[in-house]
Length: 329
Ligand code: AMP
Ligand code: MN
Ligand code: MN
Image 1 (spheres, rainbow, N blue to C red):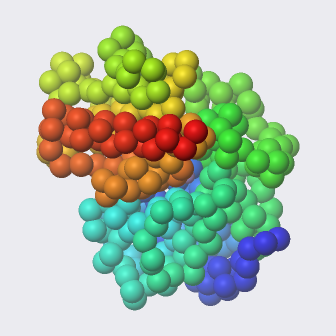
Image 2: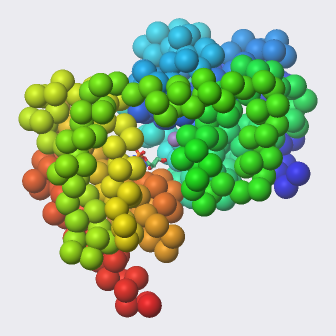
């Protein structure tokens, strides 16, 4: 195996009380990686607590252990090891709660983001991987914890969601080999598909419809975007989980190269921008220009201001990236 898991194995073996945390607005990868790892480490006698600042979205609450996730303010015990999964920066864990443990508590990081902060830690990071859960899968082999059905369901969820159902180009031969091993534990694919892709709230369906019917684009279709302003969200009582996943809809139009979704969060005075890009269009770099991050093909940033203020600036940057790429052809 190309990773050196020895320092991570040694850290885990030397610890008894382990805290695992992931990123805000948790997705399938951060939740599946955290919960799968927690199950595995409990099976070898470790005391493991999983904590996230935000609640899991409704469609991921079926994950084993999702009902036992702690919020930062519910934690009392000091862990002897902190593990972060799928977080490119400490900031991604939330509003400063994680820093309280550092540097006294040793830190172990599993991640697959290319653009990231330097954090002093034992780190297993590979930006070529589709999901953090691929690293967790190999780590479990290294530490000799056998898979079981519940661990498999967690890791499969993580990989399936971060590859868009094994459709994105981050899906590699090893990704499918890992998925096959996970399936072999007895995963019910029908249940999985329904949970992950066909269990959205009525609110989500309505907002998605609204966004699709108000989709905007440049004349050549190359830049496609839609936005939800605070008043519209209020009118529809939109929950954060209703909004999750709308960004993907911007990438369905023929000829699109860059998709953007703008979510006005008036309570915080910010706009959350989700970006998606086709091959050759590095939206990770684009989001980083605005203080965000992510991956080459899927990224995000959170920008202070109203929708009316933020959207034109980000669209202008998107158009600049399109023009740069045109100039190269
Ligand atoms: P999303 O658009 O929220 O689905 O996020 C797509 C990707 O961008 C995720 O994998 C995150 O790694 C990254 N990302 C989203 N929002 C932010 C942010 N505010 N700061 C840094 N990275 C982000
Ligand atoms: Mn994630
Ligand atoms: Mn991920």
